[in-house]
Length: 389
Image (cartoon, rainbow, N blue to C red):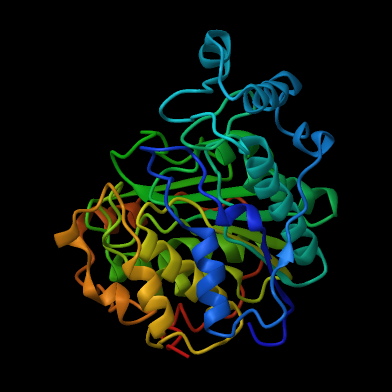
């Protein structure tokens, strides 16, 4: 990543709790990432403020009446029965809370701004992004608007095509796939846990499409994601020769996340992102799911470090260790809090055998339909994982 401009998009809005009470996302996440990166000296000039997306920008994908409903519910502090039934607002899944509209549109604005950095040849980083379940006319899966779609549309409008979208979240990126399933300018790839909500993405798209799904088994480990990146994602990337890459790097695939059963280390996710954006003119890197405040904050902070070629195999500073000790999560019992989360930014690796279910995903991979010359193999493909810096 050396020599490329990197921009961290953030907002003070993420220092305030969202989603009300008794919700998996009612935990510190992006605000904690900002704190940790500042403590490490990785944001010497602060972050770039995420501009809130305008109504016109949101209507590039979302229905005007749905956007108005989000505004109305936020303003009223509640959702009427009609809003719940028609737009899935005001449910336990997608609650109405103070600042909802501002928070959701800021996430989208940050991802669009990150895409503009990518159009200029840089890497835009928006850890508050990755709301990949958002549908055109309703809230879905804790997502009110779909910021990865906004980033991709910004890239396409700026003349960057084709675009490769890689989703590393534990849950299938259904909203983004829906948005671009019939668009030959975009390829969508999702690596997600099989049998996990929303229970979609069980197969690749129809022959000739640019939709690739990899539902992986419970306990998915570092060796297995390495095999998929090397054996599937990089060949698709070479065939497509993307002008830009957008990555949703959900932290819910990490060991210790309460809403998934994968066992990845954060270093494995960082390496996967690095491989995806290597030698591509511009890139957008987003957050996503992540319901363990300790692992999510360390993951996205370290990802920012990797994008800037900082040393990531570092101890947690005492000030942040005290901050981490103040955290709690209703979904994680005290005895399940791993001491490693307080000691080091980087997880120990979870290398193990590549199981038959993962090998089968490689064997059944449809040939990419975009015909272009192969690029030289990257360090990831040759088995030389990017080392801790």
